[in-house]
Length: 98
Image (cartoon, rainbow, N blue to C red; front, side, top):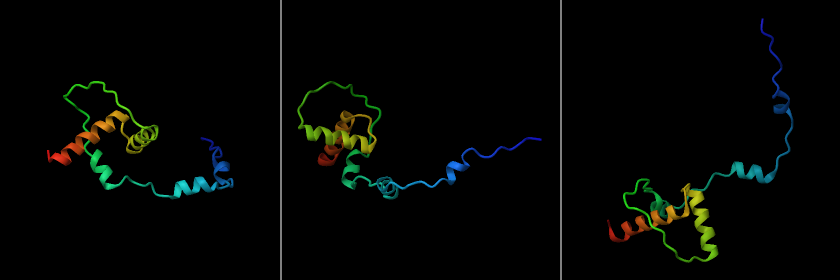
């Protein structure tokens, strides 16, 4: 006959846990989704590009660079340059109707 031992996590589960307000708030608040206009700019992610990529250099304000990184992270885009590329392609299509 197999002997069943006491669940080793039982005491942990029964222990009283002190709630940390910041954690409770973060868990209870629904995640905000990006605005419709933002998502429409990056909705059509093109993973396959037949056009070869080249390096370009341009300047941004440090605050703009931070914002760009935050947007990429929030939308789950692999890199800031990928986000910029998609934004340019989608905005171009929107402006010129292509």
